[in-house]
Image 1 (cartoon, one colour):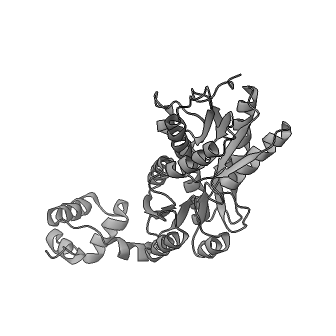
Image 2 (cartoon, one colour):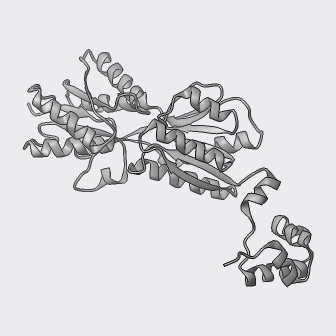
Image 3 (cartoon, rainbow, N blue to C red):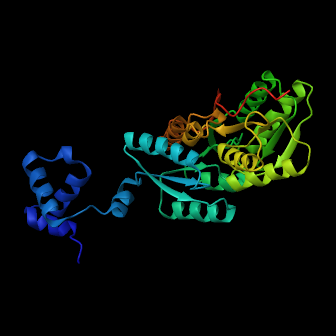
Length: 331
């Protein structure tokens, strides 16, 4: 079917094309009678303004692009809720795309956002190198979320991952643990700081850090936990890189016939909704996910509105959430 045009609306309402355009852009400048006639004609015809043409006039699309690294991680979904809510309150919409934990696909998603002329870009858990992201930021405001940077061209917002990891170790040490293994996720966003925080806290207590490579996934946590069990050197506690990895580790521990926390205490990171389910009841480090999303929108719109040119790096403190997977080591 042929889509109705602004000329069709003007003819139906008995007004000029320019008046229809004015109603669509600045309705407060049009008399009540004329505005009502135009809106009624548009409704009868099923007319919708051309967003692309309107964006060319306004030089704004009213859209904030959001590229997240993993659609399957509920942490990102919770952050996206905060982004969508904050954007809507300011008259914007959020458009989401995923990099599927692949830097090349992430770059493709970013290019698509640029081609669609989004007004700003929020990147969650980005795996792209900072210089490449800085080149993107030369053409529009960019905020990194969940990844720390001191770039002068990029804004960032995230949780103090080093402090969160230290809090996890302090909690386990306070229970009497000294053999604490950390499953880390390599260079993935957030992991290096969690690893350094773990190592710092362990050495502060005169304990030897023990690291096992995993990933921010259930399979990554399970594989790392199996490696720990196969080593024959069983720790009394494990600190996982996130809640998903902790769930994978939990499955392997259960399958081995070991008790949590009797034989092995387990601590995650993120405090996802599933961590609080009674059958899981995972001790974890919490992050204010929706608040992180809202802050990222604020940073982008500050730049977009010209209120600020220098970079801002917002760091939010985490919090320890104690549940049933951590307890004193068995004597």
